Length: 490
Image (cartoon, rainbow, N blue to C red):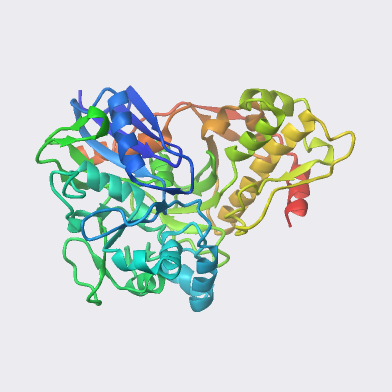
């Protein structure tokens, strides 16, 4: 029996799953928390990776690993392999003005044609523009730019500052995959290569692809080389000690890794016609297609997936976060909030929550706030507020689903995943708001599962097929709920 490992280094935590490479059966798992915030020292991710691996019983019997990570985070390194400043995460909106400037300079159509997306505050390129303008001294120190999964894979392979790693600060060892690179706003998912001009638009300097590919500028910044989905970044020549006492042993194969949403798609085994709605702290709607996806409005980003196809995606900043905020207001957990929500009728008798608690990415309203409309003596109670919270969260994602369909993506199967999908009220309301059958895969860490599946691919040269049990919630259409939400959110 051969074991492989998958890592999900998300905004909130690091999760490790160790699986049988043939069947996909879970052997053991581990977890460690990440700190809160939208600007984080990547050292916390490295510490959490070591702790999660130790919590999973170590890697002594693991043949291959791949890391999936939160997308877009800006990890800027100096020539000594040290982090220049805390990483700006995908949900840090301080670069909203920089994004608007970049769109104005080139136009939406040009950005979509060259990168498959329109810059918003989430994307790495806008964070580099912010760094250039707001912290020029730090920008001048940047020798390489990586994403969270790139940086963690680099550290796991033994690279880093000379006093912390056996192989030292070899920036030319940085590597990534197409799914994560496609969320930077300076990588073309059609040609599958970096756009040096767009990188210079962001940071004001040219780029050089790791492993020695020449750049046009003398002070070019290193960006990770691209690794194919079925290839390995490398194999450990010696043991690498991790924080917390875990050890990655010599001979461990390290796969290409991937962005978290591509990891979930791979873990779910999505194919053309499949679309998933993921309910984490943030929300995503994504599917897999073999055709090019373009949306000049910027609502749908045409990312790459983890197999070489496309991953059209819509992302909201507010998903399970909505349940946390309203549950906190009512003094209840998710389960009780769901019970309260089911005590109110569909549509909450006209009470509507527009849940932009931390601004919003889709629609692009970084400075927006949440609104509660339709308050009357009859609707201002715990049950109606709980119902409005669940409906508001799902209506925002129903708009995302409509936008994905609007690009020509066929939706023949809709899957609901993420921690909040385990809530009975969320399941009931999803069948009403989406107005179609909703499939619920068995609970699991699908981002980590996708990374483990990719690790097995890199190890054997063949992508394994792992079965997933699902249950179906029958459609119970209530179009008036979404119509009322859209009117309130306009």
